[in-house]
Length: 154
Image (tube, rainbow, N blue to C red; front, side, top):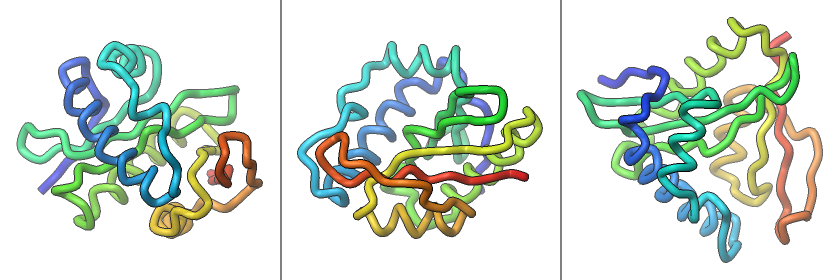
């Protein structure tokens, strides 16, 4: 069984590993050559843990998934760097992380969560649609079609 909690600095190495796994898959799904997430450092992850909302899923003492968010204004949070370890895919861990994340955001008074993902990454789009997100708009600013997805809590 797995649980979800706020991340601590001790989770940084695991979060970095999971992020790299997730974004290697992301560039394959999006058919793009690279993404900034693949070049992130442990120090950047530690900064996020200290300054953003970072949650991890864990089994026993092993971190198997993570998500990050930052509050962009009084009512909106931006979700980023979501991923589940390859060895633990399709077990409901991603859904659970998002469920805890949603509860925490609502408790904080957040009314809307937004994120970007590759519009052609159909498994990701399906996942986010299944969690109540919708496409707000698309852009080609990074050389591929990115969808801005939104989820309203009101």
